[in-house]
Length: 119
Image (cartoon, rainbow, N blue to C red; front, top):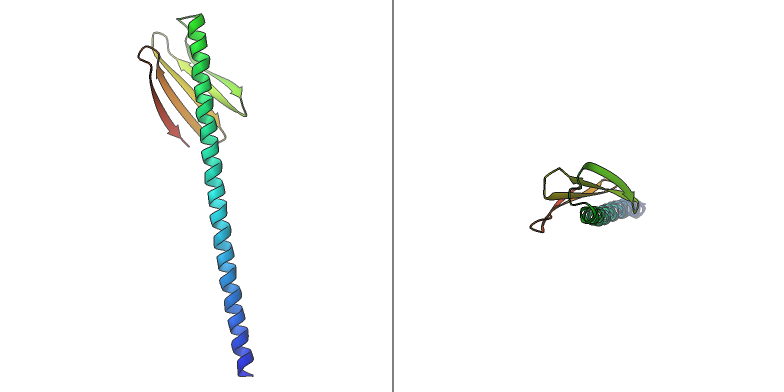
């Protein structure tokens, strides 16, 4: 009778250990999936911001005095926003996708760009 009691305790311990390992593995997989999804959204937001800069460059070729306080254009499942203040040589391309946002600042005179990452 004593051996049956130890076998039951051992089985309960083993099942508890496997349950804890399974839950830990599930949490790890979920967090990695979430991180990869966030990274994918940021990369897409970055390319949307670049699209905004290209849009602004085309507008500047047509009209060198072109400026906008901010215009948002839906594209590729997300959106991009272009900003250029009057008399400024700085263009901002801002890409949005879900919770990710990427901002690229471009000086059209010096052609220097600056990337700002936000999540």
